[in-house]
Image (cartoon, rainbow, N blue to C red; front, top):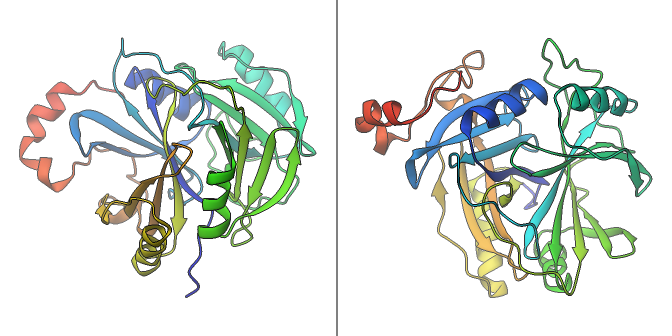
Amino acid sequence: MENKILGLHHITAIAGDAKRNFNFYSNILGLRFIKKTVNFDDPGTYHFYFGDEVGSAGTILTFFPWGEGIQQGRKGSGMATEIGYSVPKGSLDFWQKRFEQYNVIYNKPAEKFGEKYLTFLDPDGLKLELIESKTDDNRKAWETDEVKADVATKGFHNITLTLNDIKPTAAVLTEIFGYKLIDQDVNRFRYATDAVENAAIVDLVELPEEKKGLGANGTVHHVAFRVKNDEILMHFREKIEEYGLSITPQIDRNYFHSLYFREPGGVLFEIATDNPGFTVDESLEELGKNLKLPAQYEPQRAAIEAHLVKIN
């Protein structure tokens, strides 16, 4: 099998109140809640996963809801600052009305790289965009009673990284990940892989004077790129080590296997496998309905469940 990065796998962000986060993404935005588990390093904190019906790579947005009163993050250099979702053409009117109905902060639609988009903030201040992609997106949308397939999100379109100097990060994307520069608009440089049709774009925004961002509430924690299996994952580990960057050993995250490294611009990157997927511990129908714990925390289930706030 060809050793390729297959676009984005998932994006993980930090939130405050768990119930508010769950309600916004599953009800207002209409994503499927596919996994309710806990942070591997802090079992007193939830780890939520939202995506399409099966949790396909390229649709998975995950959150660590740390609770009310946590420090507010600040967008800045060395971090991912905008998450772009692909939506069907002509759907932005629906979303504007929906955001007005639910008092969601948003900007009027604008255009970049020949695509209409709508910027909005989630309740914690995380910046997202709904983008009418100019390339066909045939991914099957998850439908809810209020958000039907003709307007629903299809999965990621792009991720935007803000950097003081894009060159070292661009080199990682092109020399290691196989991305190519496909467009530029002033200080925004668009990179894409041709290995997949969707969730294939990384935008690098260069702001030399921008202060370093603060990773806390309402910010992106890390960006995960997708590979097919463990063999290809370890191929990239070798490649990144040879490049001179420090990278973790392989880590089993139950639903995928991962490597982590910080790219030269400061953004935490992950590479994650397709295998074994989200139905490894509950059926497709049951996804997101039960609290699933990593094996090491199962003996503490009663205490963990008593501590975590009820969300659904």
